[in-house]
Image (cartoon, rainbow, N blue to C red; front, side, top):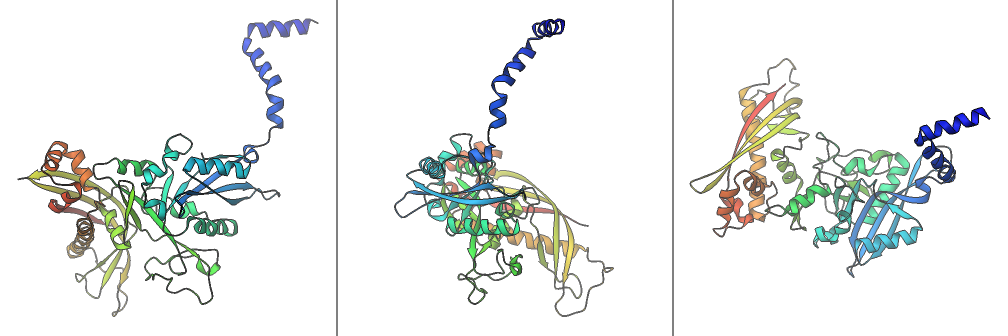
Length: 417
């Protein structure tokens, strides 16, 4: 009896114990008997959206299905629905699946080419209107049918463990995936002065040299090979599709897709992008005896801009600090070049600078001819020289024509280790 009185006196002295006891009595039994979230709802890890011939939305959702055996592995299942809008299609999918779909674990959203020809910013308004999907989710343009790509991706994941998100999503600064094309960067480009947004692009191919699939002989990518429209080197009688991610960039203007850049132009734009490190640099040189070309690995890169107007002419000076290492000596006719031979010469650095300037110049000429600011030059002047830039546009020059007047200078500081 004394112990009971002591217990109640202690509770009155510490009211939180009483609150804790009430929580345990009312909520703990229900929580213990409650099924896990993965069984009560669908955990979506990837989503795809496109439109059909009638203009209705087609929504694909890749959900995680817990294993029913003791292996603790997870399988993926593809759900598909349609609706007059993104949210309408998602609501219909909830009904079809019989459970609420949770979008907080989505790694990427694949947008089809048909819907990209509309205003994509309006089409995916249901994604950014709420906080159900994070702004860091990657947006990927699919040049083929989204449903077909997801089916290949699920088969790849279930049989090999390789996730499509690991292939196409930008993970870090040194990621081999081109750029960080997330929801936030897309809308920043959409609301920028030029209206240009850039997204990574993937496709399906029959060419085993250009993609990856579940076959044991195809788990490699040769992005330097010559790709053809119909698959090129596809094996006879082999209808298997390969997921092809070769670094192509889809360019949007005001939310509508304009071009999918050729691979060489996509690669050239990276040199003025401070957030991306190119993986390779092949430079032809005549500065070293018995050497045709040198393949370099890019270890680090930083880019700084200085813009100004000189006698009414927009000038853009770019300073690129580059640290590279020699990966391979390409020598087609002579013997092997000794590792002791001095290859770090001023002539080699001049060849490197000439090659980078050539690449950037090709990208700039492509921008001018196609009226697409693929390197965000308008945005640089808008941020660094806002007053002069706006006055320049008030003379009647459009943002896409502004590139025709820009004079670009590139200063390279190259360090070979």
